[in-house]
Image: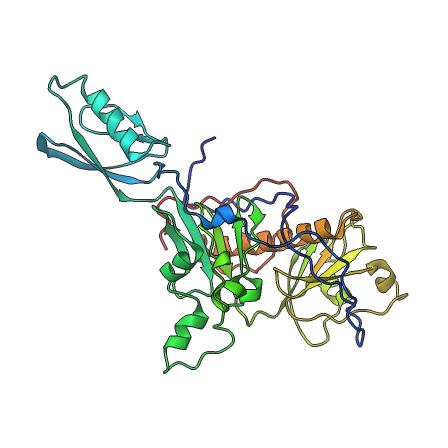
Amino acid sequence: MRKLSLVTFMGLALGLFVGCQHPGPRFDPRPGASAVPAQPIALTNQVPAEWLKPPTNLFTLGPGDKLEIQLLSDPATKTTTTVGPDGKIYFNLLSGLDVWGLTLAQTKELLEKEMASFIRDRIQITVTLRAVESQRVWLLGRLQAPGVYPMAAPMTLLEAIALAGGTMNLTLARDVNVVPSSEEFADLRRSFIIRQGKLLPVDFNRLLKEGDLAQNIYLQPDDFVYLPSAASREVYVLGAVGQPKAVPYHEDLTLVGAVASALGPIREAYWYEVAIVRGSLSQPKVAIVNYRAIAMGKDPDIKLEPQDIVFVPFTPYRYLTRYVDIIMQTFVSSVAINEGVRAVTKEPVAPAGVFIPLGSRITIVPGAGGGR
């Protein structure tokens, strides 16, 4: 089904992602407690082999794409036209021709066929793609030149990062006159890609620090790539709370204090199995705690760490892996929505301040002419 790319941010799809993320070991977040070994989990975060191969499908036109068209027999007919919001182009004597979803070769064939109704001689038309606006990738965060970039040809993740000037880590390292601060660095452990509403199992740390090309996937149109700042000190409170948000971290921040900052659990919350997720996105650690017992003073409160994710569920979970998948998906989707809004509107937006209902099917659609 066709989607029209507009210069607006439409949000980010949140599906029930039962995927490839390995939830890693559980941990006990109480002060002085030692780590609890994880139970064996069959799932892995291996990147599928087909993602490492260049796509074979040809580029197809969409709204905003610019074409140069000319009758070979008449240089004066050379003109530049833009695929309209309805997917149509206009050339010479022709009324609007629907080219949305057509390749350049198919567009040329259609133009020659329609022009044959007006010219008796054999028609030869050239069609040249001059600008791409319909297919784009989001490259945001701690990059030298973050933005929304056109994608006219197959592009790997490394090529996309290079297109955006490289990560701040790499850029500053090349400049011997710059003394980088932690605020400038990209946090590769918590960088991510979202495709069609799903978090992809790509490990940025392995790709950019260890040179593991098994993580260098080919991107697809509308992929959302985000590299956060290593200096981020928020705690993210998501799920069944009054106002899901990023809570500023301070040394005395506890679980009860963070949830209270998010206006507390809502009536529908299942606060017996609140999750605290810590560590990298590719191998997070998770602790499940009885928030009700803590709030009632029956169990001790828990001191949080910067970048912890606190998730208050609506219902009890049956499988830890699926529960962690939903938490991670909600987290990256919330961050992506806010960063996408920031990129389009150029206005500051509090990170992770939006709760996305599961199965909402909200999507990000990069805008025609959005630029970088």
